[in-house]
Image (cartoon, rainbow, N blue to C red):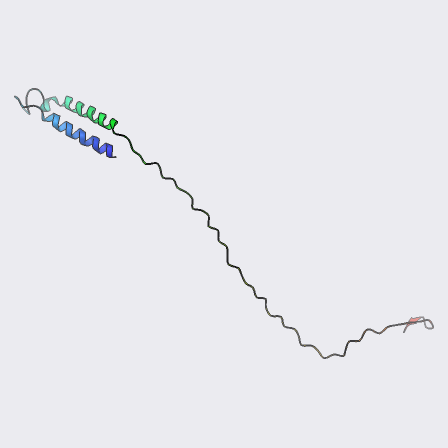
Length: 113
C-alpha cells in the first residue's frame, strides 16, 4: 500500500512539473512543451513511476498462524457418598435356642421315634 501511494505521488509530481512546459510564444506555455505536448510528459511520468515502483522492495508480513488451544482436562471432584443408616428390628423375646429333636429308629414299629 505504501508503494502504491509513493508511486502515485511521484507520478503526480512529475506530471505536473512536465506539463508546466517552457516559457515562450503561443497559448499555454509556448511552442515546444506545455499542454500541447503532454504525451511525452505522461510517458516520462509513467516510466519514472514504474522505475520507482520496481526499485522499492516489497515487504510483507507472513500470514498469521492460528494454533488450536491446548485441551483442558477437567477432573471432577470426588463424590463422597454416605450410605443410608441401617436399622435393625429389635430382638424378639423367644425361648433359648434348642436343637431339633433327634429321632431314633425303632425296630419294633419300623419307624422313627
